[in-house]
Image (cartoon, rainbow, N blue to C red; front, top):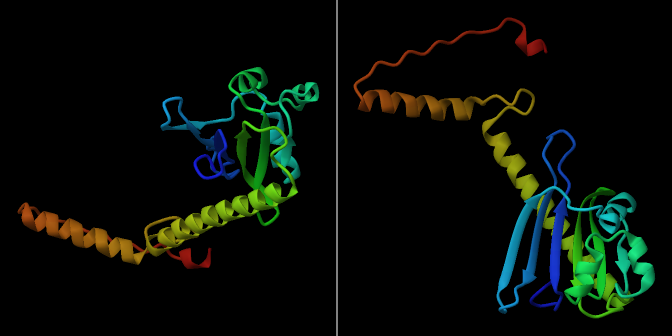
Length: 193
């Protein structure tokens, strides 16, 4: 978005799953003054994040067409005056949606007021959908890799991982000339749970 689309900065906020207790993740990319790129990764959301939270809550894009317009201050955009001083003229927050739930937001900052016309918004919605698909794919891949080695109900190592770990422990014990003891027990009725 920054290099190809000509935006000043692109930021992706990801909301953690409610059961993990993790903080939200923020990844931002901007062009540095010397012409190079600058990455920044943080946890949490800074400031009031008005438009960002609005996009999360409504699952709809939030647009500030011209930051120099007096009405743009009322949007609650964090660091409004700093953004204007840095040459930012327009802002959009696009929700990342999976199954009707916003899991994050992509923010884009432009040096051109009014840049977010209908055609641009339609294109950016497609970009946001592609990002969401990629995130969903990565999550599915991690889940599949987890299920290869762990029981989904108990999150304990399954037979495959147990056998790999046992073979490794046996090999290490043999190489070091040590004995290895293995205790096996069965809990009656555990299969009924």
